[in-house]
Image (cartoon, rainbow, N blue to C red):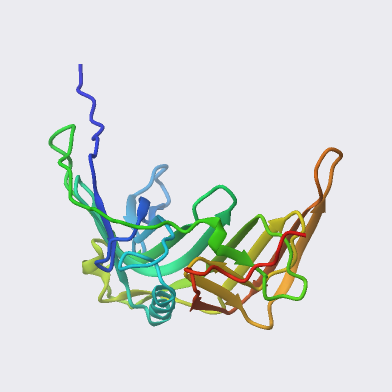
Length: 285
């Protein structure tokens, strides 16, 4: 009988541009655009060939923490969005056990805060070419790698949404997302098959504005919010932000109604909040 091939990892280290953040999960997707060559007189394809450059997408889930060298900061997001516009790649490495190394520009940021949960942040990076995947494992159990982080996660008492508005109210959950559309710029004669290092000379992934920034709040007396403090980081939409949807729900037996507001804009500002004292939230009505 064959031996089970699943590898159990004792520990791994994940870094973005050399820094180990409190990362909970990492996933890699590689897309190879292969098409059939169809000709008269042949029912099947005459060939199956890649016709454009491969793409790699890396998705990362992290926990927001209050500070320190391993914390996501406002400057991180400002730098990554600026790099996306310039086509400057970030490098993500999953080391220990048989991981991978890939590069790309930031294409999505999503921050989620809800009662009874830690604040989390999802990041997505996309780039041209195939990321490098480690060799096949030779044993069922991999060796542990050292990755000791001492962090303080952001809890909901340091999260507030819309508190600076005239109609701010009691919010139970707040979400922020930033979608950064991108486009592949390629040159005739450039290599389209192979690793990211092979194709990078003639293919580049760059962001193309406008971006789409969205703030969603929900609560028993929620109101529209253009600003949210997620612990040490705040996000703020511009004065042009508008409510694109809202809902109201109430039922017999509930303590109150549930409100939901979604605001959208093409611009967002990342800034540093004071996590030690907490945001200036309103009292519960």
